[in-house]
Image 1 (spheres, one colour):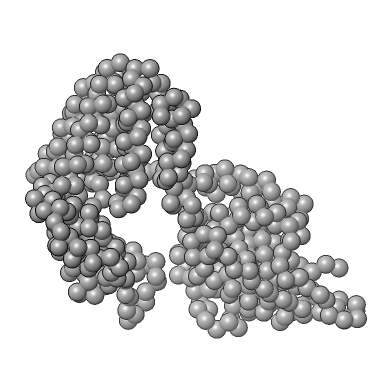
Image 2 (cartoon, one colour):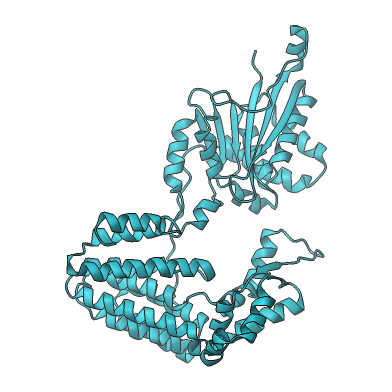
Length: 498
């Protein structure tokens, strides 16, 4: 007789160790010899850990004349149950060979917590969740999945309780529901919310929720009804002067740029978009939509004032308190790790002062010395909050800064290039509009993006009218593939554009 072999893949802070301890406690309380081990890792986020549990009937061990020898870690092709706290962890279990078609019951949450590789990609580095689900389902004997993070949130508990309830509901272990619930009660911590989460997950697993998760039905956003006259005028202009196919991006662009600067800045955005709307080749409105989207992003580039404003918003404090599950009477401290460079400081100041500081000698050295080690600012304290609010208030002279002058110059050149290209090749103009994806972030990330963007634009100029849309798309994708630009250089050499 073989032991029951269970592997748990969870991220730090999700209660994977608690879940493993529950399974061990339940086994030992009900006549099983149990053993648990953990193999920590740093694969993604705060570190993914594999917890491994083996259970063996004590009566069978006595009949065999001794204690069983249980394994310390899971082996590919030799696991009965795999529990994954997130969809990517389920994929990792399949990749490691822990999930097999003839044996393994896989229980996984379908929500995503994006990995470091996904989040640090210059482009959209996200793994397609639908493909991940499809491949994972093919690998398992039985695949039970739903959004367990949402279920935990709804019950005020943690995802480990939801996984435990799903495990009970699956019927794969030789224990009753009462034995599972008694285990939670013996733990003595967070019993009531844990039992609530357990019960909901048990019912869902019993109800056969091992098919495809239901797709969310998109709900059309209501038309904005602003009260401020200037804002209302902008909304009416976007709705009346532009085709309906592009209004979702235009309205979001207006909202974003009013928040970023003011209504006058959003009006400049619509002025620029009106020129794009008048271009030929806009019959399918694709060029208008793509330009509306990317122009709004570029005009709301991230500078120090923008970052400070986002970090001190009430909605951010509320979100952090919710994610940390702060209880009444508890105090939350939020530390911001900031390392502004001299260039970013100069770019925040009015143009004349910024250029003077950048070209100075002693003042420049003094600022560099003061900022070389970075600072930790506690935005949950009055002093830290007021410091960042002062930086956020610098947006009032944003349009006079040296950073704005540089960004505005690039935006105008980009729009002119799109307009000229649309006259002869509308499809290529769409690809040019999407090249704004290369420009993002701030500090070193922004510098690398601008460097790749300039390289691609020089290639566009060299190729002239001979450049095909597919070639430009290939160059853009290569630039987004790695931050050092090696793949971009290889693509340029391949097309003789280096």
